[in-house]
Image (cartoon, rainbow, N blue to C red; front, top):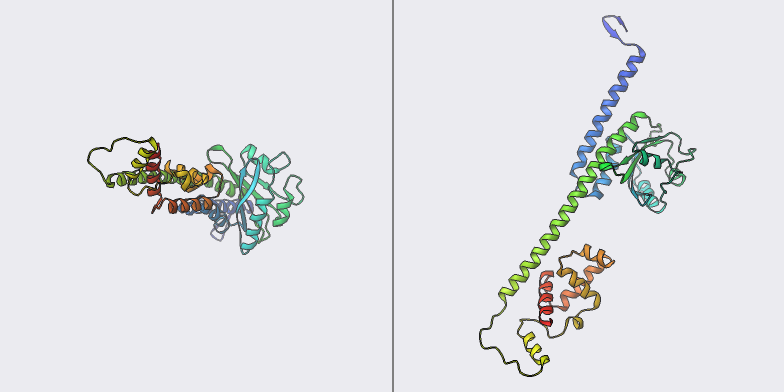
Amino acid sequence: MRQGCGHLVLPTQDRTETKRGDRRLESLAAVRAALGRLRGADSVGELLNRATIELCRSCGFDRAVVFRVTNGEMIAESAHFEGDPQWAKDFVELGRIVRPQLNELLIETDMIRHHRPVLVADPANDPRSFKPLVDAVKTRSYVAAPIMPGGRVIGMVHADHYVSGKDVDELDLEMIWTFAEGFGYAVDRTILVERLEAETAHMQQMADTANALIAELRSADLVIGPSEPETGNGEANGKRMRERFDRVPPEELEALLTRRELEVLELMASGASNAEIAQLLSIAVGTVKSHVKHILRKLRAANRAEAVSRYFRLTLVRG
């Protein structure tokens, strides 16, 4: 350190360290700001898309990709390539078809096993990089970090400086590690909120169904008078009993509905949503909606609650 012309002059090494420290503080501030902007995401899908954008526009990377880790595979979920959205879209489509296996031959396996980020300085020549995806993005070097809320790895994020042509460095490694750690908590929170909202909607649907049934039973016509003699055969008596219910068709449920429609209706009566019915019956949600539409028409019901109410009444009469 020397003093000249009234100014304090730092040695070259000290100035370099000061600049490095300033850059580190600025980078960490950018990461915190990026994570703060992710708090407004309403769903996990939106969170994944916005994460790659924030990594590029706020944290200084040119390209970023988020992978999901499932059954020992890396599956591309979202990507943002500055200035080339089509390339990013094509890469995600490729990354969902060509899925790297997380085995001993892949460098990302060490990252997951040891819960730490990695810097791949020369992926084109590194024997442990996954060449189909490396060649697809033509990356010179990249950093990656695991997404691990609660200590369980559920995904990973990759980023590089392809457009600027720079190689990634240790500060980039620290930035993506900090971002991935905060992003993991954001994903965990969003998943929890989505599950709570779905459970709340399910409970509300069950309550609406019960209220509709109670309202319909209360509004049914009540007949006060001597009961009809139970003469004749049991089938005739059962028919007269069915006719006492307002707007109940004389046909049996099996004659009205197909076997699959009956399964859907029974699950509707249990309070299951279309998505839950689709999962339980291993069919598409659109197919469930089509079955529900046919059920409403055949039971002459205005909505799901009315269809469930008539289902209960029909099964009660039949029983």
